[in-house]
Structure formats: structure tokens, C-alpha cells
Image (cartoon, helix red, strand yellow):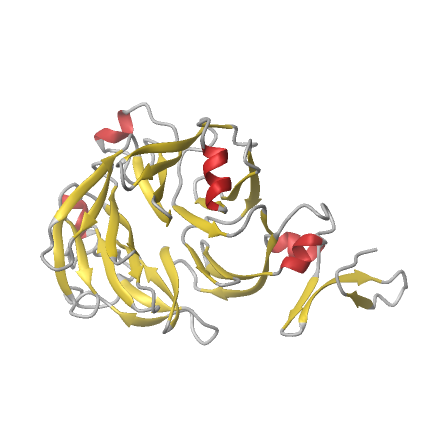
Length: 361
């Protein structure tokens, strides 16, 4: 599948002026998609992954939530410039360096925080630390969750982290404490929780996703009502900034623009019984100008791609690349504090390898 897409006429120039690319995940299609621009046209790079969901970024590090694990990547410009398949093409290359096995905990959002890499463990209704010691380490759970078990009691899904790396807010589909209890009121039961106080600061949101702190303000998406919202964390007041056509998840910002993922719900989807599933919708990304609250651009996919989970801005990356795990076996590299090297097999029966800085014969 090539995932044919169309884009609004001004989008290539906008991405170019903002000096960004985008990374999208679609668990439905099992792809990570990198979107970049040369100012005139959009280029997309597709990579196969097993049920990719949340993406976390910090400096040169990237984490990706998968079906049974969390994969860790490091970007290296030298490896990018000398990528064996297409040298002198990319300015960033995310190479996989670690895989933390979690089994199926239905990982949604994840972030690099001051407490380490923390993920939303939706199956167990808690936040967890991801490291090599355990499948996961619980670090926080809502006050209304009485015990940790894999029953998706409240559909905890989103996490907002501030500029210091502190976890501040989470979203859930309901303040419920029974197996999939959130389903009974999923259109109006959504909540925003203050992690520090463990208090509900906003209620009545239709399937909240992707809470994000940006410029000191808390934004999130109401997937059921197709709305970009701002929440006043002092009084819980919720304001609709814009409405779009589609089931929305995935939110990222650059400058005065919000980048929002749009999905077309399949009838077989978990939320396929919603009225929104009957609408004529194309999956993609819509860009909202925060000042005017109007659409500033969009990417629209044909029916091969129906759902998007996460959207992240890759700031300062003009043409990024990412290798999945099988590709990292084919194109081997060594990343150390002293630098990164492509590993070049010697033409000898011993099978020994020789590392050469930035060169592949």
C-alpha cells in the first residue's frame, strides 16, 4: 500500500516555513509515516511497525509504543547523511537501539519525563515507567481506581507533560472502576484529572484524547464531538476552539498552529457504533491556526488509510528517516557517546565486521 494522499496548496510552504516535518502513527495499517516538505511538494516515508500508537520525543531520542513493547530510537545526523540506500537525502535518521517488552498493556500516550519514560497503561488504568527492570512499573493511578488489573476500567489514554518534564494532567473516558465501565456513558463521561492533586478538573467531555500543554495552556481533543478544546485548569471551564470533520486523536503544535490527526471509524472499530462512523470522512491531518481558529491546511488520505492515532511535530527536521527493527538488521550501525558508525561487513569467510565512520562500501 502506498497510502495515496492529497494536500492543500499552502501546506508544503507552511511546513517549510515552520522548519518542521511530521510523524504519524496508524495502528490500523501498522505504519509510521514521516511527512516532510521541500516548500513545493509533500514527501511521505512509510515504515512497518506492529500496532504503533504513542510517540515520545526528547532531543535526539524517540520512543514508540507498539503492540507488545516500547521501542527506543536515537537520531544521528551522520548516519542520516550516509544512509546506504539513499545517501545525501536525509537530515535525521532514527535508529532503533532498545526494545522494552511490556506484553499487551494497550499503551497509548507516552512521554520522556523527569521521572523517566512514562506511558499510559490503558489496560491497567495507570501511568507506568518503562525500563529494562520490569514489564512496567506503576507510578500513578486515578483515585477512583481501586486495584490494578487488565480490565480497562476507565480508558485512561492521554497524558500532558509540562516544559520541566513534570506529568500534570491525564484524560480518561470515565471516572469508572469496573471492567470497561466507561462504555456506558462514553459520549459524555470523559474527564481530565490533575495528577498532582488526583482531582477531576473537567468533566462531561466526549471521548477526550491527546491532552497537551502548550505555551502554558492545556489543550485536548474531544473525539466524539470533533472538537479542539482548551481547558482552564483553574476553574475547569472548557472552551471549543475549532471543530473538524472526523474522529480526532493526535495533537502537536508549532508556532501558532495545531496539527490534529483525523480518523474514519470502521464499523468494526471499538467506537464503530458512534454516529460519527456514518459520516463521509477521510483520514489525515488538519492544521488549525490558533489565532484565527480556522483551517490552515490539510493532508487527506484515500481509503487505504483509515485511522491515525498520534501526530507529532519533528522540529528542525527537514527530511527525517526512521528504521524499523528488521531494517536495523539489514543496515547495521553502532551508536556510542563518541559517535555513530555504519558497520560494513568485510568480504571474508570469518564474518568479522569493520566499522568505518560515515562510510559504507
